Amino acid sequence: MPRTVYLAKTLATLFAIASFVLTTMPATPVFAHNCPPGATTVPGDPTITCVFSGFMTGGGKFNSDINNAPPPAPLMPLVVHGFILHCNSSISPNNLEVNWKDPNTGAEHRFHLDNLIASHCEYNPAVGSPNPPDANFNTWVGSGSGSLDGQDGASIYAIFTDQGQPAGTQAGGPGDWSTIVIYAPDGSLVMNLTDSLFGGAQQAHVCGGNC
Image (cartoon, rainbow, N blue to C red; front, side):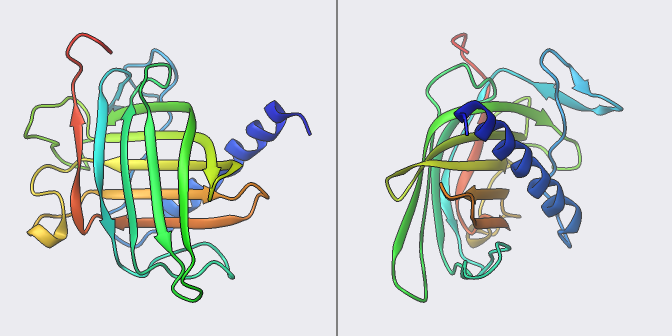
């Protein structure tokens, strides 16, 4: 199958899975919306602002034994991530790593982003203020391709939010919410995680004239 067709089918599947996650999550959902290039607000909802400049940085851990991927994918007692991601996928750098350990086998796994295919940011009043520091968005949404355990052909869809400080529930904050959906190179779903950050932070940043 040509790679362009494979990526198109993979991304369509990722967005379908993400929509399922967002509509079935019981509380404090992570929101993502359609922001066509150049749009200033989400079509049909002028309360949500579309943002294509700026970037988000983050790192930390989730530790709630959550994984909505089907068996044999296990529950994950600890997931660690780190990233710098732009609201415009054509602007670099864009780095994302997700690490976890299989509690059944002890095997350690790593997803590494190689190519950010699509991204945008949003300011959604329902998520809350990202300040401090000042920023004009509170949600990053994107998808891309990369490697899983060193093997090319994996895919990811992610949503990261910044809900102010302190960011993690460990520090007494509400916890920045995230969704991370990862597919292995063979197309199997290995991670479908939606959870609040336990330790660490996700921070929205305005550009200093260079993005």
